[in-house]
Image 1 (cartoon, rainbow, N blue to C red):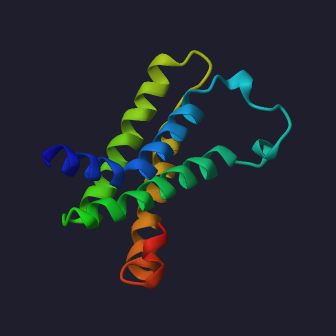
Image 2 (cartoon, rainbow, N blue to C red):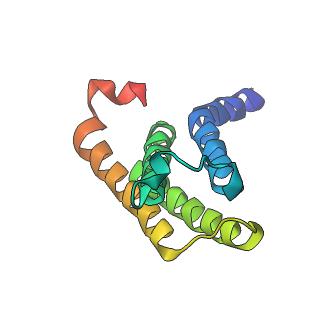
Length: 132
C-alpha cells in the first residue's frame, strides 16, 4: 500500500523528469556535435533555447505540486531555479567545449518567470490545465 503511494507520486513527475533529462542532454552535449549552419546562427539563439527549456520545465512541475497540495508556484519555480543554477555551474566546470555565463542563467530565470505568469493567468483553473 505504501509502495503504491510512492509510485503514484513518482508517476506525477515523469513528464518533468523526462524534460529534465532532455535539458541535461542538450546542456552537456559537446559543442562540436551541434550543426555548423542552423537556426543557431540567429543572434542569441542559445538564450532563446535556454528560455524555452526552463519555461517548459517549470510549466511541467505545476501539475505534480498542485496534485500534492503544496504551493505549485513556490515549488515549481524554486526547483526550476535550483536546477537552472546547478546545471549552469556543472556545465561550466565539467565541459571542455561548452561554457556558461550569467546571461544563460538570466534566460533560464526569464523562462521560469514567464511560465509562472502563463500558468497563473492562462492555465490555472482552466479546462486545459489537465493537458500539461
